[in-house]
View (cartoon, rainbow, N blue to C red):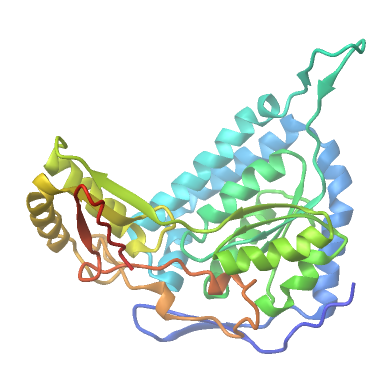
Length: 355
């Protein structure tokens, strides 16, 4: 399939300072072709390797992540402003995922016997080929590894299109798999604008697509994949309600509410976005929530004391997407202390959304 790739560079910017970090040249048409063909060619041997060998590889990846946790975390902090302590925790979580699926994948994907009139019936789980992952910037390592660990352990190969503002993280992830011994083509990163994604999603070498992003991005990807009868897994944000009942432990509720709202500077699809509080405890809960919010340390994300860093969504990668398939346009909405509204829940069920 012929895919025209824009020539504009992809720029990463430090959201703490607004200063440029790096200029990345997007992949050319020839490079994209090489990556997609390489993934297709790598699939048969990787599938045939078996769970035990793939598990050995995944455990090496986990060990590598832990060994170089500090340097990997620094890239995320630099590119999207995640406080360094949270960034290191994200790397640890990625390592855990690699170990977890290395241990359990074989059992998860074992044949399941089914009672039928036939002599023998069973459900089998088999890898399907190259899986395209279109990932957002808010958890630049975790979003990738939570996909890659189970997908690779199942015997698939992976092609990543990451958000442009975390291109450094994207390239580092590819290097991690390479250094740990992944055969060429088993894990690849595409550096292309979102405007080129329709043809990548529709390419016959891509067997399935997973996307985390906005409803618009998910709709665009699902539309193309649906025409090709391709499997898709879409996580399209959320608007989680945090409900406080009258008999709640208000100290515990307020502490959890602050953490739920401000984790990753509020840039999380699972962050609490709507607070609904029963009227009898509304004033008391609100006072405790505000007091605990004021205790948060806002500042330089490289400082280990910082709890809330800058908003990565205030920066953007170039070239920007002409379509909503670009994960860099799938930014989760974030919330500051001033804009987080908390509504009392009464018999009329009044509600208010934090935007």
